[in-house]
Image (tube, rainbow, N blue to C red; front, side):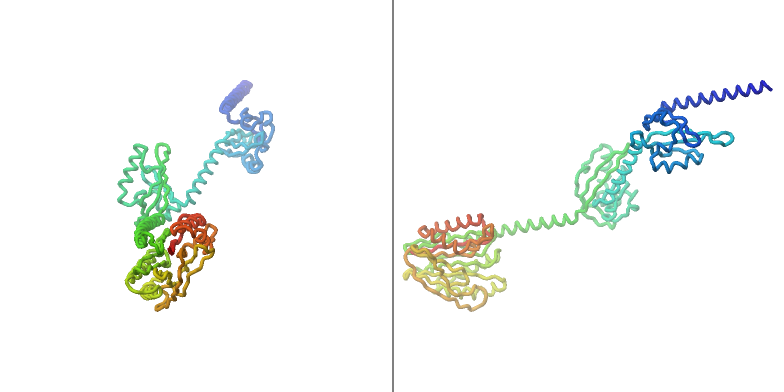
Length: 522
């Protein structure tokens, strides 16, 4: 009996010794792995802690022993983790949030096993915590990044289509649904070429994909390309897209960003058409300007009795200004200045027509008022239908009698200046503009010119020219310059007027034609 007791005691000692050795080896291995091995009594107080606790939480073993595990948790985990210690059930990969000694949070993955004797009594808890703070932050950052990426894809104004190396669609955002007519569920897993690429481009698409997979190069990658795409109903429309490849492991994915450019292409087409029309119009305007210029007198007329010259500074567009002087006969010189309303080919054509009517009367006897009456009746219907009108001043110089006969059809009155006077006199007569009504009677007046008298004829492009402040050049300024240069030749007077006009307006060109004529009695 005594021998049996001794043998049982010896066997128990051997088991206890083996258990201690096993626990010691386990603790040594735990120390080597850097994981925090711990033991707690049934109430959750630490009775053992490996040195790794210092590396993970910043506390020494002595600072941990005897403390309840909840003292090291964050306030949230202090409430939530009470369940596990009370349940007497093992737990695996439990996420714990500890407060480090210096105050920052440490996240661990914890596994714990209850140690229970044969009678079912809880002796203690044994467990291990592995620091996963960096891993958890990385995972959270990755999840957040994926959320942001998904948000960008979902809210993008571009159609975003992602395709794998087999040509199958793996992602399809809402804008792609709207643009192509296929839902996300319908598009995923389908071949890209079957859904949005017209059939005539299928072969080129497949060849391009195979070429890239072999060479990692492609002519359309990472570039903005214009092409044609296809909707669900088979209709085609212009798009602008870019494709970016991304290698994941041994495979590629291709991200496509697609914009519909139908409106832009239509606008570009309209711009091209407008440019062509503008070029045609500009060419026609140049031709009209050359024709218009060729119809004006090419040189001044100078004689012992008088001198007359004129000049037209054309606006950017074709205008309706017209000036002319010619001998009606050996005793009479006719002088005309006119302005057709508007700035286009139409006024220029009416100017040509008016000139033709006036010139056809050259060999007939007639006075300025008679000439205006004939012109008004001849052009009335054409002007009325086209909604144009003509202002015109008609002078006739009787060389023998040194008299100036004139009539006016609503034109700015010319200025008469004697060389030794400091004031201009306007030559005016009653008369309606040409084209308002038929059978108009034009008043006719006569004045005798003294030697050296000057007459300045002009169109309203001169007086109504504006400077950058919106101020008109004005008749008063014209009169002053005319008086200041009265001793100059007619050509010099015109040069002085144009020079000061350009200085005043701070421009070399004007919105309206500027036409000037000077008549000087010899």
